[in-house]
Image 1 (tube, rainbow, N blue to C red):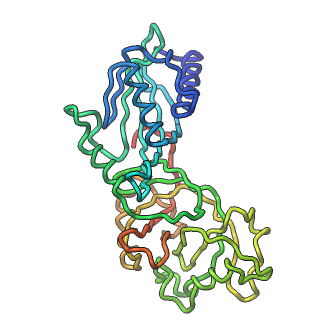
Image 2 (spheres, rainbow, N blue to C red):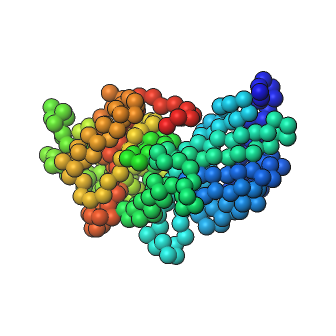
Image 3 (cartoon, rainbow, N blue to C red):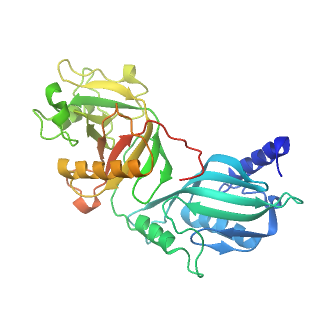
Length: 342
C-alpha cells in the first residue's frame, strides 16, 4: 500500500504534473505506463500514444483550462483527483461562440513496482452513465456535449464578475464567486421586501435608470464608466457590477446626494446557479428558483437562509428572447469543494 511520506511525495508529484496538462510543457510521459488505459464518457485509449494524442487534440481544438480542486488516495494503489475543465470552440463553424464546462473526477491506478499510472478513468458530474459504451461513447455524455454546444444564449462581451464552476450538474451549477464591487439601489419600499419580485419590477421608480445614470456620469465627479454585465436583482434591490478599474468603494465616484445609489463590495462566496433563456418575468424567475431549490434539497446542499435568491440578467432588451441569458442564484451555507463524490 502506498502510504506515509512516499504517498505524500507521489501525490505532490502528480498534482504538479497535472497542472501542466494543457500548457506548453505538458505532462511527464515517464509517469505513465506505455500501455496505460484511458477512458472517459467520450473516448477510450489503450496506450500512452493515444493518451497523449487526446491531450494534444483537446489543446489544439478547444483551448482548455484545467483546475484541480483536490487529490487523495482512494485505494491501496489508487489516487483520485477532482477537477474543473473549461473549453471554447473555434469560431468556424461555431459562430455563436459556445463555451463548454465539465467537472468530475479522475481515478488513477498505480503500478506498485514502477510507480507509473496504468489506468486513468474519468467521470463527469453532469451524467450518470459513466464510461465508454460500445465504441460510441456514453449516450448521456454525447447528449451533454451537444446540449452545451447548442446553448445559444448569449453573454455580451462586457466585463463580468469572476467565478469558477466547482460542479456542473445536469440541472444546475455550483460556482465560487470572487468579491466584486456593485452600485446598488432599492427597487421596493422596505415594507414590501417580502413581496418584492426577483426582477425588481414593477417598482415605485426606475432603478435601472437610476443606476445607469450613475454609471454614465450622473455622479458628483461626472465620471462615466464602462457598462458591465449582468444586472443583479432580488431582495428588494438592483445592482450594477462596477468595472474592475474601480479598485474599491472608496475609489468609486461619489453618487449624487439623494440619488439612492450606494457603492459597496459583494463578498462573493459559493452559489448554486440555474440558467434559463427568455424574458425573465417575476413568475418565470420564481419558477426557476423553485426548481433550483428542489435540486439542492435532493442533493443535500443547504442554502444560506440569510441570503435571498437573486436573478442575474445579462442582455439588453433588444436581444432575441431565445438568446437571452438569465441565471437564478442561491447562496450556499457551505460546500466541500474537494470531495470526490458528486
